Image 1 (tube, rainbow, N blue to C red):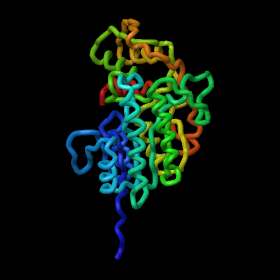
Image 2: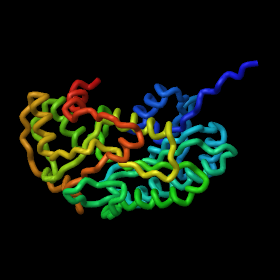
Image 3: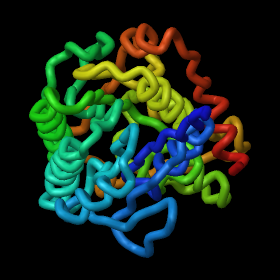
Length: 300
């Protein structure tokens, strides 16, 4: 009798966040059956409500789902989040509970991808940051991500964990507390007055659809212990992003500086090298920023 191959199962934490739905669609296109975790609400066949701080409940869920791969996206992603305790609980303790539950499975997943952040590097120089650049966090969000990375090392001998360090990424559905989403939203609503913080900074912006595709590529060829930047390799100033939105939307903004949007310990330039990513994936062409912003303005 011929054995029918089973569809592999991918577990995605943070399934209802900004990145989660894009990640789920990408993995489904790659042939996975996706099961998501969310913090609260109702559970169903494809999504389970469980708090990552509930270690026992999390272990029960993983034992039932039996994931072949895990993509860990859940956590607090806003650098300016007001509740410091929640940042550490979610990003550090939640990650440890997930990895501990995965390590206790009778059959370990073939790949565990843990999303960290490029903010672990701290302020950047004019050189592109590589995975070997020193970590120099100087806000609580970044410190929590460094700690989470060290937590992954506790399980390195039991789980094939890959850590990704995404730089800034954008797309439809991102919270309006993020810079590009806020500017695009103003353009869509015809609101000319923009209240912003420091615009004399540079960021490497990538499209969320490119991000999740890179995640899927990396999940499909696990390399335990790897740390990988996810970025385009190009940085742009925030002022130039505003100019691009103005050009594509036909809007002309009236910009007001507002101290409430100026962060302490602002990173002036966050720009990375994607050479390691391209080597692992065999090359990947990131969408131009113009294309992504046009997509966001079209809203589809």
